[in-house]
Image (tube, rainbow, N blue to C red; front, side, top):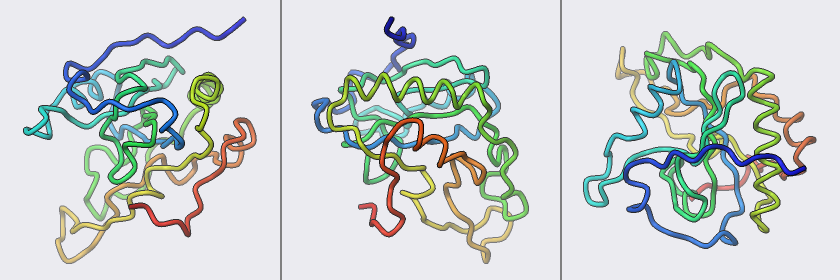
Length: 192
């Protein structure tokens, strides 16, 4: 029996996101919300960050701590989740505190919450579903691998911190890659 598709709760601006064909999708990017819960992630996802297109930042799928999955952006739409790779990728957000609420404070760069077993099982199941629908999906990366930019720390501008550390330093990459068969992003590759 095929797994049931996650509930689809499109963001208010989804129809304004650029469209694409499913065969253009080749990369799955794992993120962490770095927020306390799914409700706050939804509130953030609904914010308009790009006045020209009247769209915001979000992933396609969100996985809550208990493994519940929601889809917020259709696969045939380009979500804004990682600079330079949006057009060819799917963004999956794992609910996690990360560095919340002091993301860029140099004194608070430790990751607070690793992915849990329920989230990992749900992610593996989601990837299995996506691979049946997306013929060219063959690679996987963390947000931190694709966005290595450094910015001035919020507490001390003379210190540079990483903008993105998600999905976190303890993310179980080898287990996920073994379970899904996706090829890991080569850290020697250059993200556009």
